[in-house]
Length: 83
Image (cartoon, rainbow, N blue to C red):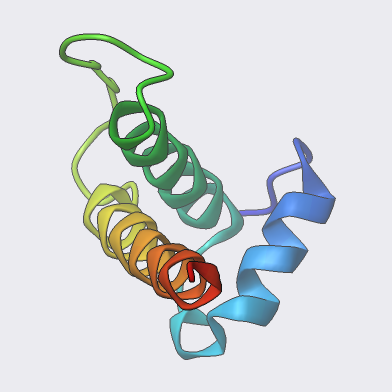
């Protein structure tokens, strides 16, 4: 199924994670939302629990992996820049 919402974001995530080419556009979109939710909680943009209502098989676990791996990458770059 093709998702017509945020095609640029979907293409960017597909380019960054080619090993997940089996995901549908909706799953990529869902994973992107989950990844963003993790970043919101980590960087303090969101206080308390964040409920992301998505059905089974929508890409939540993949998004969680993306979010955590991106945070590690960003933290590594941040730590390298520190004196």
